[in-house]
Image 1 (tube, rainbow, N blue to C red):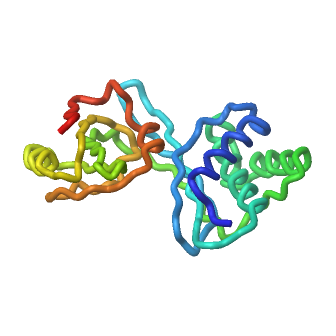
Image 2: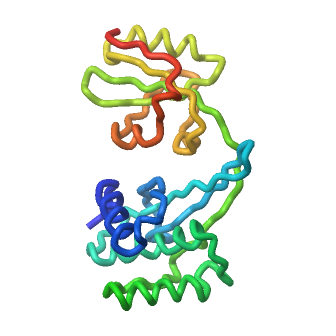
Length: 216
């Protein structure tokens, strides 16, 4: 099997409930195609007026076809990192005594085979400033949903082009700091990026919407 977002979300929810007592925050899931690792957990510390807020991202490799049991163990490996970070446990290294103790406990109590792989890259922690993005959400006549992030100097142009397009049925504008949108480009000409509706709903809040053009 290869990872899917549906599998990642379902398995995370299941293991969070059965192994971690529903204490773990759900990370953003990214599917990647790389040679160097099968799973990787990232933590980003986002600075605001109150201090730092931790945001988590789990990367899962879709390049290789692996059995489902192994795919689950890789996710559990990353969930241990998340557990240690979220509970603010101190460890000597990325896979130090605390990590190994949690891993061995899960393996013994739940019959798992979590390992420490030499192919796993070191987990990364970085500090970034909170960044505001203007996100344009387009409901397409095809039934799909797409987004684009116009530069501040091109907002009027983007709105004109989208309003005139017969492929766009409605437009919503959101102003958000969600890190999900940090890696999207800000094109000078209108370019739409199709996204999963359910995934998008996780990262946009109703009170962040600043304008809606429906029934265009």
